[in-house]
Image 1: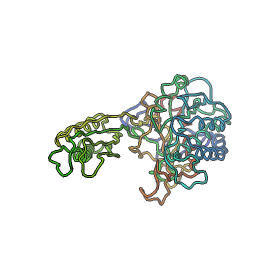
Image 2: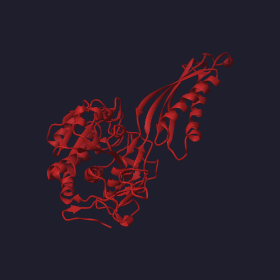
Image 3: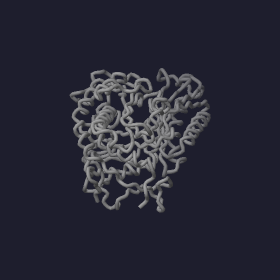
Image 4: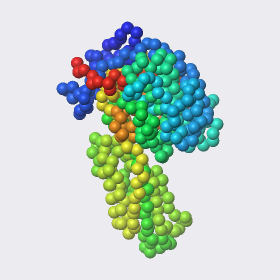
Length: 448
């Protein structure tokens, strides 16, 4: 079923949802008697839809410019200036090399985050606008996200920000890919807090989702991420006399195998966690038992107990090394908490997006809604919700309909290359989210 009002276009087709979207959760101010959060779709003004479409050509050109001249974390000033030029204004500085632009009057604002930085990767996409900077490339989609946010910002300014339920704050954030986290700095910056953001929205292209699908669900959607550094100290000696040594290589090998049992046997199988060792270092010669062996890895927790997993890692390292006559130690490098989507805000956005995945009828945007997707990827967007700002991260699919999972380049792969049409799909998803966010946070939705 479609809902429309004079002078507006509904983003969503609700079909059997009878005018509401229900997202099962355990609580919240919009919770109905049956335990579901319910929200009504918010019609999107037709003039705003038209204005956004008119901006997409210029946004694609901006995407090309950003992609051709990528800048790594902490060096985004040129990218920020390119965004400012595309917006035809000066940005308010934030977090060093970031910038913000507010549209609308006083009062709480709906903030939207776009990332400026690229990765330290040599590009292998073959795109005609490939990176001109050796060893630096936009292979995570940040150029697409930023260009889409510029298109949305220009469209809102062209129509007039009063068309939204709240002022818009466009945040062009630095340092998503490297520490110190740009989001962690933005969220505590006085300049950002002065705008009183009542909602924070983010988006990420996602090759694990089919093209034309956008995910908006409550609760954890990206995992926490911590780095671990492991050192095993043994006793060096000749490889032909192993009994005279205490072999840290063998001990470390046992540690790595043992770590894989933590999630398998200590974490509730209905909860998600990951322990991955990605680097091991030991020795200088094939016939010498070294005195030390080391490894580095990542620990992820989506809805599993982050602290419990890290405690188990320490226990496995220390006790396994001791069993081999060695000494093991672990250093934890804290990184990001989990990305947790606000329940009420996610329900409001889902209702406005409509057009559920699997429905033969797509929403007028061409996007279908998915409320199941989440992953053990990580994003510093998590700092916004951790600081108490109701937040939602959307994921917009890039995979072709006939793509076989695991056979196409994914995020951070040197050949990952979303096509230019993704700028429009991301921008349309953000438009629906921004329109839904203002009214949903101003007052609780009425339960039908």
